[in-house]
Length: 178
Image (tube, rainbow, N blue to C red; front, top):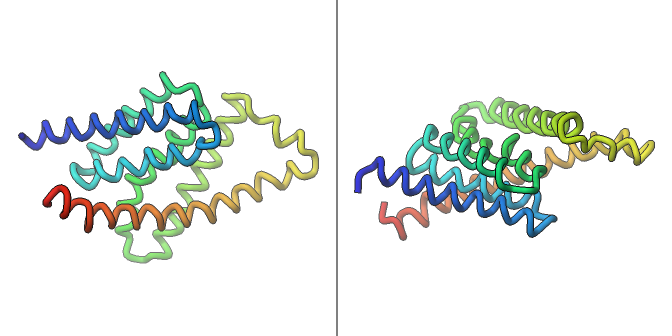
């Protein structure tokens, strides 16, 4: 089989699996963040096998298709705004030699994406009134959630490294014979 047909086949399978995970967010309401994370992590496989441009094409396909067919728009927004493209971008950010600079960029991308998602949720989707209803706690809860999100993001980044290494050094050699 040619390299191009292998790329299309793997891209189609990963795209279908990602959309299936996104559809499951309709059935499992508490998985609004876990399933988009898993779907995004699958894009690392495309990037490893066929490069970043192929992974970006799959990301765009999953984003568009999910926006059309998935009823849980919060999960779709989380995938589009961060979890879909970050695993692809992470490969580039990990190549920065100065680790502290790499982490500054990673945290800037995460915080920018979260703030953008909050603005979209508040102004376009109309989900913004929840914090005002909490009174004094509402003023500080957004900052606390962002701080907790940064801690969770660091853990997520380490998990992606482990996942990618397992794929490269265990799954790929043993099962794919590469």
